[in-house]
Length: 358
Image (spheres, rainbow, N blue to C red):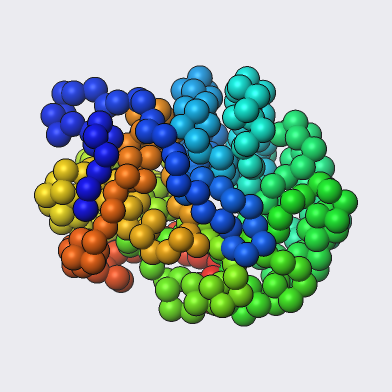
């Protein structure tokens, strides 16, 4: 296991973290029909919602740093901050160099219904709603097309064939380039793929969230569908930066997440300390090791890193310089065995919306 020079954060807690992101040279293709993208994508949700307050100026600077480093895939959702995140991406791309702006691909999730107060009330996958959501996203993004478009969660009242069919019509009209899926199980994947080509499945995948390995990952590989893996650091839990006594803001989703609660948190952070010993033995950070593990799971997997600052982005991109030998993978998986996480990845009410878990 090796890392490039100047990409590993100092072990001195007083030392400032580097904000210079290493260049991204590696690329991967989203399935057999999707676009070629940078081997790591930038998940932008935390810049607008669900992880407490964010610094708008730093968020834009982080997107610019990602683009400058060669990151081409930006992931968002129209419900992240009720449109705020799409407007933020619009601002960042509008003020980016033309070459970076032209290379950027934007992946959008839609369908979540929310109240004025921000509560989630369900999902709408009706064809008319799909096209309505897309029209608003295009306006907010300031673009004439969306590169990958997907419903965030399956609408239980609407067959997935109808939802995907509506996106396929947007593809035919030139408003969308590729169709994606999000958090769906093997049967739903097959049904969706029977309607139109699917570029990728976006789903949580990390050292402590390995549920896709049993049936979902084999299915997408059989069908030639790529994976964009979110939660590769489990919302910061396995980043190596989360403190046991950290107090979360009222608007931070993690305050309601089972894995961040009481004994669950203590057990999960014990796993992180075991991983830290492996990482430090190789001159890497915990985050780099966790991201590199996901990268090593296959060329058809593109991890999304939810960096909200340039320093965290630079650290994450350092994972691209890491090569994991078989013995390294074995040591990592011995430190954090499959199924060892304490607590579900979402509260019960949200788990019920995950087709991938049924």
